[in-house]
Amino acid sequence: MGNELPTRLFPHVFALNCGRGKPLGCRLLRVMPSEMICRCLLVEQDNHIVLVDSGFGQADVRARWRRLGCIGTAMSLRLCIEETAYSQIQSLGFDPNNVKHIVLTHLDFDHAGGISDFPDARVHVLAAELQAARQRKTISERLRYRTKQFAECLNWVPYDQLQPNSWFGFDSIKLEVGCDPPMRLIYLPGHTRGHCGVAIKFDDSWLLHVGDCYYSRGELCNANDSLALRTFQKFIHVDYRRARQTMRQLQMIVERHAHQVQLLCSHDPNEKIGSFDLKEQRTTE
Ligand SMILES: [Zn+2]
Image 1 (cartoon, protein in one colour):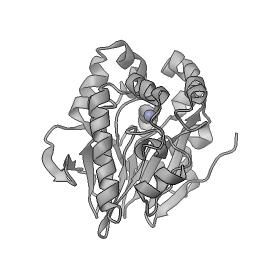
Image 2 (cartoon, rainbow, N blue to C red):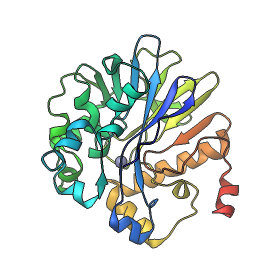
Image 3 (cartoon, rainbow, N blue to C red):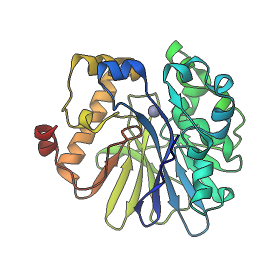
Image 4 (spheres, rainbow, N blue to C red):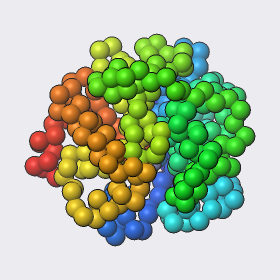
């Protein structure tokens, strides 16, 4: 399996692909890109590294069935050690021991697997998400949250004091990750109970990792509004209505603040950052 090099998005920010899969149902329904990636971000600071999401980790590669169960098979995952965040950090010439903070959009199995590769890092997440992952109240939550991936983590930093309407109309909170310029946890509910985005500031603009608010850029643009996509969204999101509401808010950001905020999701390998026009995208897709 070929390993894609990490991509430098900004001087101190890299995109890493930490796992990939080809879910058969999604390919048949054409609701996702034919291959799904797990996009994480590496934010380089003077004395430490911050990871945004962790993808699949080394233990997921080595003991896939024990860690992931049947969901790994259903997703047709293609995992290798070289694509773990740990290996890619080494390949960039950084020391994995310098990963002091991991910020998670949510705790689904394709985002939380790398936590165990950085046992000394502090793991930042919305408190509601941590609670949902620990309680696993529903069948779908028992499938999506793989307890073995994070059961041994002792360094949780849960956030529960969101400031209403504090970031482009979203509730948010400043992340205590020692970053300058700052990073914020942005509440983007719907996909899971405590799903968030992570915003990174550059001069006078922001990059927002939106996690799993959408799976392909076409979803954001309403380019694909098929029955198959809506069925998929109802299956994949814990709260479909809230997820749709979140999507509308993200679309408003793109329409009104495209010069200030750029979006990237977790799983679309074709998504690029850059100036972006919703109307243009709708007509060209
Ligand atoms: Zn995901």
